[in-house]
Length: 409
Image (cartoon, rainbow, N blue to C red; front, side):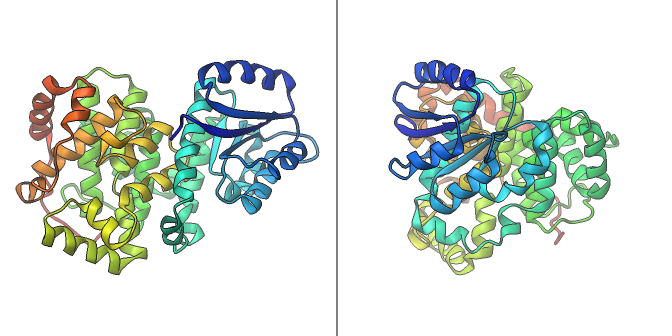
């Protein structure tokens, strides 16, 4: 998916362009990358040579990056759009949100740019899927980019000098999200049950991506105003189980906090596409469940049969739109079928897949559902994880917190 690609990069700083030209070409020699010092030059070139991904700096003369990407969104709706921006550009960026698939905060590394492009290429592939386009078109603008999530995303994206105050204000307006973050932190053993750390400390403990993922989940269940331990809606309990298991495995392997944050967030968001399907395509959603039960087949096969698209693709497309990292998008897209992923031996995808596999077996209907899914033994072998697998499963089973009561929160 990312071996060959057409990329357009726009920045009026020639030194930046020259440096990127040397470094990124060296790391991705198969990419076709065109560099332009102005939006006007890039637009003229795109008329003859379309691109898969367009990256633009925000601050440019005559036409800024937000306006440039708005034009791109109208002329080339399938092209992935990435905006490079600094914290001071927030007001202008808000005006360009609808035209931008991803914001990349400056300063950023070559790796940040490459990962953003690879994420954009995954999104580009999904945007070309006609059935997925039709399904997502049924969502309102506020569902595609919820205002509450947009506010949180902007605060976390820019990491500005006032982030503590802004996060405190955000938490004051949405106390239930703080309660949900505390619940996950407790399940992972990061805090005691009676602890009440402020939202800012929970962001530090869980990570930016995990907090954003929790916000999405909370919005998906209708922004409940309160939670009771052991009484979470199943749509919240299930992803929390996956997130906890993924984080437990990553911590057991002594991965750094950022890695743990990414695998946890991916596990939390794996099934967000099922929620979308149940809401915007209820008949197809119900039919896919009936097919899976009747034919004893896995849910991805059933969804493709009945709807034409499956929830991992929907989840991944939305995660790309919401600005989650490339690894998270890939892990969400292939959490059911890791052997199909572009990255053939991804440790992060392995952990997300393991969390889902173990959660399915440990759940109340585990024996019934597990037989539908073959273990991805080839992928596990490529990741050299055969010897770890049984130990991971025992650890996850021992630390699992079953759902005692379901409510209609």
